[in-house]
Length: 539
Ligand code: HEM
Image 1: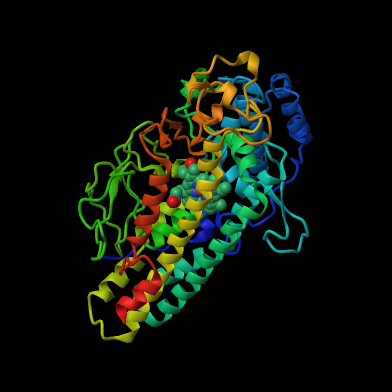
Image 2: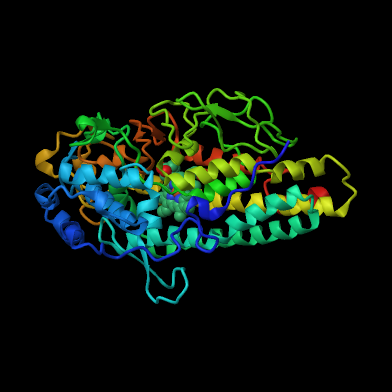
């Protein structure tokens, strides 16, 4: 049987040098003066939002024809502008959430999203991949030389939050060609060269961890949680934030409501590509595969899910050296959102990580599907591991493979620490000003009792120290409370008298991330918690 051709990066709008980031710097202004009303509003929108006049300005905007955007670069610039203006419009500043988006934003946003094969909602692509510029034109794409084109809060903390992620995409870019080379080396049965290629991939993943850690340097967790994160929220599972039906896009699909998740780095195609390359399988939180749960033995199956249109797509968990076209349903659920397929919103058994592909640009999503079909590295190493173990090459191969997986696990370890500091701890501490920067008193309803006091009276101690328990209470006063999980659309609720941060599907945030981390570790051939432990076990 002939093997499927390997993907060619350029066919999927991917550069061997810049990866999923555009090869050229994103446009800083739309060249056609026809779009000046958007550019002018975008220039002023932090001020308009602060003065609570952004909605007024947006309502006055003409409904521009986005089909006049000719190049990809123009479409991306327009998409970024429309994402930021629309999220600012919906969430407002000290305003109730708006459940209807005017046609002046909704219609062109849908048009440009169709052009880019992405969703009309703020995404990782908008704020991370298409929202940067170089300070020195010939300088590197790293944190010494990057700036953002726009932020929702106007803060440098928000810029840093995006730029660290942009720098991760830039740092990881060379890994894509290397993964394809490694897949070819497997096909050639060239173990020696494969070991070398994997060594180089391991080094890149290690660098990603280094960049990730830099988040702590210049992004203040308070600012992130209370001033930035609420704006990244989408409108799926947002009943308690005042959007039970999602948002109505006036002039689009007969003004139907849309429920869409907000922006999250879980939409980063780079991390998905690493998972696919190393055979990391993700499952709905709390669910484990019926077989191979510990994965100490080769995993030869391919999980293939039926898309809503009836066609079968290979899901991200394929490890086999050839695509496995048969439907294999070893889990309770394997919702697949590859090209064009819709995610099963609201299902508690969604594979959340898989679902995030719905929010990637179409070509990148399609690349991941293709990569899944040709991924063979883990299977190869597994086969070697079950053969002649006295061959030193085999031990080297297993070690370097496991080191790559280990670095992805370390990335997720650091990420969990970050989520604990930037979300869980901030939520537990509460805001240090009485409304956390959101809905003002006149709109607020009487807060429910929290720890024997109303939420209003528990907010601050009179100094800047937030009162213990202040984050619990009215979801009207504190929409942040009910949008803990907002960036990914899993609205998190903190249960009364219980410090667990939950998703609406019953998913706990930290258990979800821990499971993802543990699933990574399970992809090792010898799934020890650390490489040191592995070396000891080999010795
Ligand atoms: C302050 C920094 C960050 C915070 C607070 C944060 C928060 C979160 C949260 C709450 C989730 C759960 C799903 C969701 O809500 O979207 C998540 C998932 C995820 N985040 Fe982040 N994140 C941060 C930075 C990053 C960065 C820089 C990356 C790099 C690409 C990243 C990659 C991911 C990935 C891949 C997932 C999916 C879960 C997994 O694959 O293990 N995050 N993040």
